[in-house]
Image (tube, rainbow, N blue to C red; front, side, top):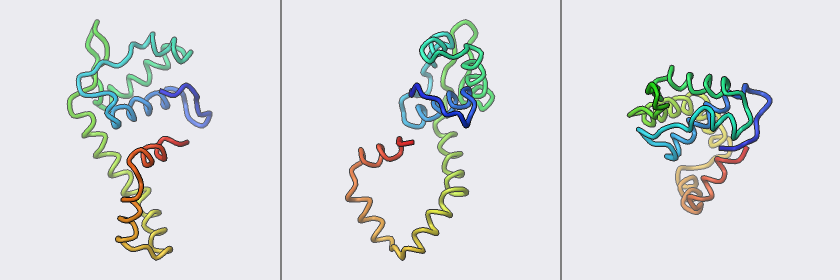
Length: 131
């Protein structure tokens, strides 16, 4: 996880979003434990209550379960649940702008497919991770 924080959003929310990104990217899988609250707090120099609040949001969203005395673990189906939500969010919020740009520029499906074919998967991944 990145160590820099965005001033425009609470740190607990950014921690939550980073865990979600790790699940979507396959870095955390179903059944995997989350790092302990103490270790995350120490590593990122934040209050343990901040980490706990981030983790609690994940529990509330049914992405993570708390096992008493053992820690927090990624729930079965968490990635699929996230993908479904992210896809709906993309189609509702981002796709209309993307589609509008495609229309304004007069791009065809063939143009888009050719452009996608010339990019390597690592190029696309690099673009997504840029701020």
